[in-house]
Amino acid sequence: MICSAEITITMSDISIFLAVLLAPFLAVFAQKQIEKWRENKSTKLWIFKTLMATRGAVLSANHVQALNMIDLEFSTKKGEGEVKRIWKEYLDHLGSLPKDSVAQKDALPGWQDKNQDYLADLLVAMGACFGYEYDRVYIKKGIYAPEGHAQDELEQRAIRVFLLQVLRGERSISTDTKLFPADDEAAAFGQAFQQGISRILDGTGSLSVEIKSEAGQSGSGDADKPVS
Image (cartoon, rainbow, N blue to C red; front, side, top):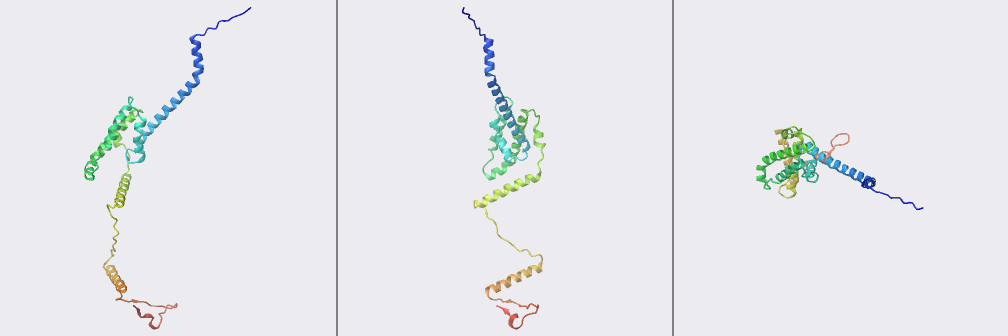
């Protein structure tokens, strides 16, 4: 006697089979996507916090690095699109300072003020992406920036500019030194000393040498005579 059995596979069975088969792959994929999202958000937060922390030192390396990472990390989607728009305008303005030194000096104050406005707007829009509510006034005024740091930065820039001018042959280093006597008596002594040295060197003067013994007594004979 031959027995036969009929096997019926439904769509439900296929779904269960595929779910069991693909579950590990889907779990790994989902985990990778979550990690990528977290890493992306972490980088964006670093950019925002760095710009906030260095908004009083816009020439610092970290500030410049954070600005240059905006295009890489922020997208054009809703919310972040405003960040990209403001940064595009800010970047265009940063390159608008005249190259001519005279025109640059005249335009610098207004250019710097506009930079502060753009940076404040950028940080306001960027903060909104992470739930931070700041306004432009707080961004511009709510910051501690010691005057000493600003002075050090200006002096370092001045030194670099001077050294570059020297290396290019545009300026020279003065080696002129002068003796400033403390009083008239010192001035007269210094003048007499210089004149005496000059006469000895050109042979018109003499130098008196006195030789003493170990007991502190002057030697005899011609030892006390001037040596010409």
